[in-house]
Amino acid sequence: MSRPDDEVLGKAYDARLMGRLWEVTRPHQRLVLVSLVLFPLTAAVELLGPYLVKIAIDRHILVGDWSGLGVMAVLFLLTQVGLYGLRVSQAYVTQLTGQRVMHDLRQALFTHLQRLEAAFFDRNPVGRLMTRLLSDVEAINEMFTSGAVALVGDVVTLTGVVVILLFLNWRLALVTFALVPILVLAAAYFRLKARQCYRIIRVRLAALNAFLQESLQGMTVIQLFARERQEAAAFARLNGELRADQFRSTLYDASLYATVEAIGSAAVAVLLWYGGGQVLTGALTFGGLVAFIEYTSRFFLPIRDLGAKYAVMQAAMVSAERVFGLLDTAPAIVGPVRPVAPRAAAAPAVEFRDVSFAYRDGDWVLRRCSFRIGARERVALVGPTGEGKTTIARLMTRAYDVSEGEVLVDGVDVREWDLPALRRHVGLIPQEPFLFAGTLRENLALGHEGNGDGEALRGALVRAQADRLVDALPGGLDAIVRERGVNLSQGQRQLLAIARALIYNPRVLALDEATSSVDAESELLIRAAMTELLAERASVIIAHRLSTIQSADRILVLHRGRVREAGRHAELMAAGGVYARLYEMQFGREPA
Image 1 (cartoon, rainbow, N blue to C red):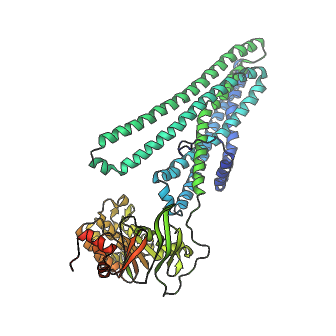
Image 2 (cartoon, rainbow, N blue to C red; image 1 turned 120 degrees about the vertical axis):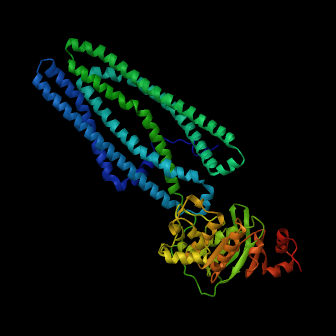
Image 3 (cartoon, helix red, strand yellow; image 1 turned 180 degrees about the vertical axis):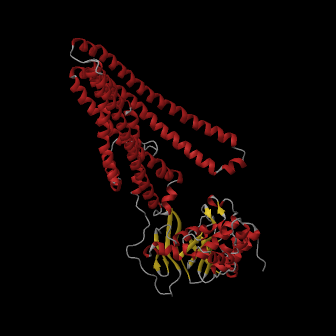
């Protein structure tokens, strides 16, 4: 059985993923090379300090050479100042590299997401995609600042310490190295336990994030049904479970640190006993013993931090797998290499030829659906919920590709159109118009920045019956629109969407339930605006309120994925079919 995506943990090192990450760093390889140069320099200067202490003790302190000691003190001070400068430079370069890589990855991900088809966003929740762009990219940044790069520094330091210890006294070095197997076993045990906790923490955190996203989005409903206490209890349970597992993980980390410190202290005790005996016999100088103890502490420090770096690397590999998996997701809907230009003006504005479509395999929404819409013709789509009315509008803009058949715009299959050109040619006003956080001016000029001047916008607002609405807002066109336009009513958002469509000016336009959720006054304004909007263009009007489409040039009645009836309102009522039954359900029998 497959595990949830957030539960899967990968290896701490994956050569394939590291190769791809190296490709991402290619534009910043100078910074990477500077880092690789700084690490051995930093390690060399850091390892020089204990050796200077050895010389100071053996050649100056023990013999009473105070002038020479002063020189050594100055050298030691300069060494520490140089070490400080190198560490600052190293931290700055690694952080800069990580931030630039993180910037490039986020830019690439967002650009790629904009190319993916609507079906992809149906399958992938927004919260998961935000995790890819934010948390997963941040984990890769951590690899550069605290993981792989820091491991390079640790390896250089450890190698230098081992060489120096063997050079100073190989017998005493072997005594120190004898404790390494115990340290490795302890580190492996606590690393395994921490790995298990890390997996559980990821699952707990994913559950908490999902709960928060759903609860915050549905806060109005929670308050409406007085569910605050129950939701708070559910949050407390999820939060408590995460806290408990975080504590358990912290316990294992602390235990690893304490174990390494204890073994390091044991190593110092052994060095004092065995090394002290060698000092007494003259086999080792007193300064050499002091330096040996200093180098030993530097030997155990990188090993102590190994568990944390392992977790960072493991998280980075999992995140890299997800990030590159998303980048490798090829768009299912792309424009052709050689787009076909629209054909003769005599072709229908929109034509469906035996179109079948299913969002999921076998669950057909449209079944061999065929119809034509002429230039400047206003066609209404009606039918029960789930019959494919909105789907038809989406297929016109190629938000989805048909399963069978063809959708033609101006005589050309939409799959042969240049995709941006098609979506300039065919517009859609959805049932829930989406406004972005920003100003009214920015929202109205969306996709057509050339019409951002006040005169053009004002003309569109007047034609859309939205000029008084804008005049009543503080700031007018520069009024602030909050997230999703929550500071505007449904009717106001719909009027602004109509004004935006007038500015965008597509040749074919689909309106999806434009008056379904507005009051009577707003409906009158929207109807007047629609009259202006639909003039001189082919249009598809999707409506449940049959009173809003009686003046349409033609009404198409969808039933079981096909066009069952077509005609004007009076003709369909006289036929006594599906349309007449829908009308009677809404208004009762129409008088003769």
